[in-house]
Image (tube, rainbow, N blue to C red):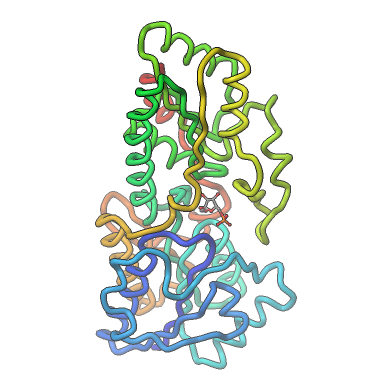
Length: 345
Ligand code: F6P
């Protein structure tokens, strides 16, 4: 068999482990692998490069992706689907493996409906993909956030200050929830539930009055007080999948921090953790998860399982329908958020 591989969307620590897993398993199964550079763009423009063992040895220890990534969307490109079809035909690719989140796998699903043999690998630091318990990249991201909050505790305490920390997650607050709980944030704000800035101020003021004179507020970049829409107005650009590009203008942390300063006597600063959450070496968990996903998608190709994704379910990697994975984001359920709220203040 000839397998094609690409990864699309934001990079995630663990992607190189997937590529290595695919190549090692494929070669040992007697197959060959070509990789497309820059996600769907590479599949449309046929940027294939041969991937062999020497090219992927030890890469699982590194972050990013050796194949580069992009947010190119074939469904928004003229003849995009036909171009991918042609590339697969020209290269005799039997199965195309696409690693990505909701957007990339949404395209994968559409291509399989058009008859192309595509298999998905779930990837996003946001952990907001359905039909899988966790996505690789998430663990590395929450470890970074936890470490950042740990550091902010000490400087916040020394200066009796409030720090408002902006954390990735436009539509789902998983990184903020897990990073916030692990890092001991005193208020956690998620995109799943609109917040009230006055209530946040009350929690913080009470905390200071009770003698705990510093605080950390962990806020997802997509969280919102509907009366504070300013941060959206400053980031009007959208990507090829129609997402507002948060983080390109003034973000919610800065807006909220200014509001807290205006409405209380508290000294307040904001910190935007930004893309460092996605960078650097993958955690051991993400290296292993990426490896297992990479190996599994090749096994799935051998079994002819097109239109499926390698999902993590209760510790096992199993084939799930791509249609189960996309269409609706996996957001933080209320009961999980309620656990975090027990520790507010
Ligand atoms: O989807 C992963 C993610 O890191 C989101 O958490 C974030 O909102 C977005 O990508 C940032 O995208 P970009 O790299 O295009 O700025």
